[in-house]
Every structure is written in structure tokens, then in C-alpha cells.
Length: 277
Image (cartoon, rainbow, N blue to C red):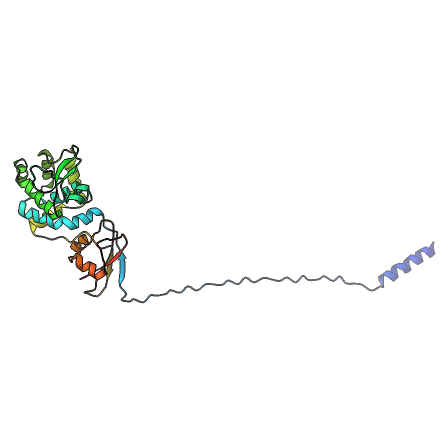
């Protein structure tokens, strides 16, 4: 029994005297990822001021505006000579001629739908209130304007109109319908609407007050800052003709054709023309 305890004691002593192994803990190497923030540098680029011409694109004029520019001066002249408001003449021309594109205007230069009524000149037949009625035919549109004034001043049924003030376009519009110029009940309202929408009454003021108004029509391209005396450029829009451009820019058809080497009077939409000074 004592022998067993002795052996056990020796064994315990032997274990306690043996080499001690330390516990080695491996340190985990932690790597930190550095986030590099790159700041973009914003630079303000200053554009130097130059004398380069600035080109502004304007909205193309409507067919009504083109018509007004073509015939406003004629209407004003008729107001001076025949005492008919220029606004009424223009509005009637726009309405009766379909802005210069109706059959009577194109084929007969008749801008006011004036029927023959004993007319001894050239004639054209056209469906109106009745089939194939007789209408007057003119060599030039200007002659239609002259005849319109003569027609109103030369007939007694329109005499009451000339008792109205020349700037009373509403009275004139209603009076024309009452005197039998047109059968359309809405004829006065149509004339008044055109006059007020396009401010045609300003032409009456010009004649009565001796003032002038700048043309409402602009070229489709306006170049600012160009040297004085340089040629203008015009981009063709629907309704443009060489004749209308010659009137607009106060030049001649032949001068425009020569400047652009044109062999005919044909124009295409979008075509650019150089307008001579």
C-alpha cells in the first residue's frame, strides 16, 4: 500500500518538473484599407468677349404677316385717296383672297371677290353663292385694290359708310355686311377679329396721325453686329416669291436673281438668298 503511494508521488513529481510550454497566441495582422478620396477640381472657364456676330433665329413669319407687309402700304394709300380705313381694306383682302392663295387671287389677281356687275374687262368664272359666277380679272393685284376702293366709293348703297369716322373699323365691318357686300352673317366678326389680332388698326392711326410703324415682318435670320453695308441673307419660307421679297427689302426681282445667279423665278423652302443692298 505504501509502495503504491510512493510510485504515485514519484509520477506527480516527474510531471511537475517537466518543461512548461507557453501558450503562443498568434496575433492576427489586420490590414486596414485606406480609402483615397480624390476631389475633382472644378475650373471655371471664362470665355473671352469677342466681336463675333451673334446670330439669332426668329420664327418664320406667317402667311398673314407676309400678306400684310405686301399690301399695307397700298391700303394706306387708298385710305388717303378714298377715305376707306386701311385696316378694313387689309382685313377684307386677307379674308376674301385666302391670304392671297385663293383661286380668284391666284388666277385673276382678284383679292376682294368683286363680281362683274357690268365689268367690261377680263373675267373669270368661279363657284360662289351660285355655280360659275362671273368675277373681275386684273393684270396685277394692285389694280384689284384700286378697283375695290372705286367699287365702294362709286355705289350709293355704301354711302353711309363714309359718314363713319375713318378709325371706326367696327362700324365699317358691320356696315359692309348691312350694305350687302357679303352674305356671311359672321363677316363683320371675321373682319374685326383679323384687325385686332394683327393690330391692323395701327395703319389707320399712321394715316390719320402721320406716324409710321416698323414692319412686323422680320427675316428668318437676323445678324447683329455685321458691318454696315453688308448684304442680308433670307431663308425662303412658304409663301415667299421673288416679287414679295423685292417689295419687302425694297429692291428688284432682277437684282435678287443676278445676286444669286438664278435662271428662273422658282424658289424652294429652306433656300438661302443673298439680298442686294
